[in-house]
Image 1 (cartoon, rainbow, N blue to C red):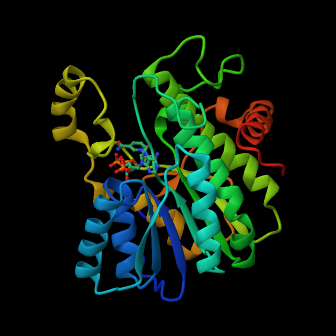
Image 2 (image 1 turned 135 degrees about the vertical axis):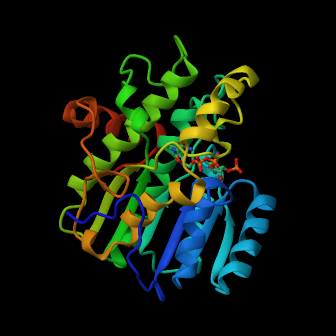
Image 3 (image 1 turned 60 degrees about the vertical axis):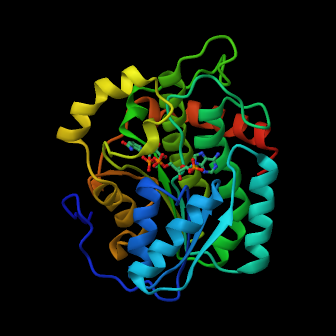
Length: 294
Ligand SMILES: NC(=O)c1ccc[n+]([C@@H]2O[C@H](COP(=O)([O-])OP(=O)(O)OC[C@H]3O[C@@H](n4cnc5c(N)ncnc54)[C@H](OP(=O)(O)O)[C@@H]3O)[C@@H](O)[C@H]2O)c1
């Protein structure tokens, strides 16, 4: 298994390859796009806030001189938006080499997506589950191709609440986040099995603790308490993007699938993330919720 010591330093040429990054207008996603664009890739930034996305695109094109960076509207809290996005993307492009499911929300008070899903499970897992399925045909046609799911070390604190997946009976801001990040890993491992022999790989990762806007919706007192830890221990967004870049670009990972990475190297997942019964339960529920048949 190849290593890169927390920084992806291998030189690669991404000219001619098509990438799609969700939540690409800020934080880890934006830095991921910047580096791929530097390496010549064509990148679609799939974003909810289009103003922020256009601004980020301009900055990236100016910094890289790569005009092949595009923004497209995607709201992962709406299945209509996800379906519309995928339909438009496939009209525009018939290749996709790397899908990076990066967008995420954390620690929100209980809110619902347009389709009635608890927001963190809805955006972080269900939205990406649906998006990935709608793009699988084009990923398969473009093989060798990759799916990269940005999870978190907090998946280790997560449990899949089989009796209350949508947090209707009780809700905890961080319990729901941890559940959604565990769902990212369970989805990755189950999908890897189902994609065997297709040339499409799927891996998950922890980007590190990174100083981004992810904590924007936290109560002010909690953000205040977190500040010293952020100053002392948190990675910059550029540093936080390294494991995504490693998973997306390292040529040695072309056939590696169903793995979880942290600091640009493989890492064990929690026992709950290896539970095949839970993975199958989550898969079946995700199909039901999103209306995906296979
Ligand atoms: N930062 C960390 O310490 C850390 C640690 C472990 C894992 N992660 C994971 O890393 C990923 C990136 O997070 P980040 O730290 O870079 O946070 P961030 O700066 O807040 O970026 C999150 C991105 O997700 C987008 N997003 C949120 N809701 C969306 C929706 N409904 N539809 C489409 N896009 C949506 C945001 O877009 P808008 O501008 O429209 O809100 C933003 O571009 C997340 O999956 C997060 O769980 C982060």
